[in-house]
Amino acid sequence: MRRYLKHSRIPFMLLAIVSLTFSVTFSSCVDPQDDVVPVQPGFVLCSDHSVMSIGDYHSSSRNDAIGVLFTKASSAHTAYAVFLHETSPVQFSDTIGVDMGTNTSLDSLCGYHNTVALYKASKAQGNNGSPLAKTVFDSLSQPGFFIPSVAEMRILISSIATINPVIRELGGDPLSVSPTDSWYWTSTEVLGNKSYQSWICSTTSGAISESMKDSFHRIRFITSVSIPDNE
Image (cartoon, rainbow, N blue to C red; front, top):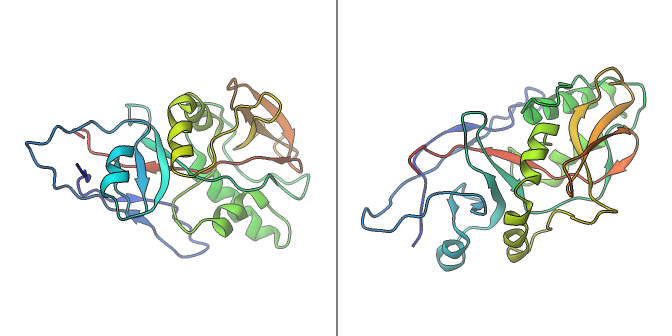
């Protein structure tokens, strides 16, 4: 059984700098007699922006998988999906002593806005800036993905046991659960020391630690997904 989602437009990464606006459209044509499985973590996000179970993806999808849903929408946040692949470890900033203008709150779901701020700061710095932010645009063919904030990274980490098997089955890169290699950049700079440090987060525990911004760490992109309440 193939499932589609209702028509819903969501703004993705809106950057005045590059003068591009992205959106996602979902469609719905569910047979009322079908036994519909509610959308849940572990569902596949496809290149045509449909979301479906791994079984439906293998049996009917003609589109490539680009991500995996790691949380449903709640009163506090939208649904999120994680990109299937990682890139090589990069620096948050190749210039120490520069405030990139991100939100420093550890509780804010602001990765989208932080990524925009990092990209703008990179453009303003010329040859210097954020390799982390540049990687979002240089390595992805799909728009709308961004670097998670501390709060968003912790939501992602809480679903690793559910999503890693699906990511692996789709040929992606499971998030690291190695105690010695589990630190990922967030897009959140450290309050009181924004020019020099940003937060990294451990995928084994959800712990965070300050890191100098010219250090090299893993990154994993996520995106917001709009799913109707009754799906």
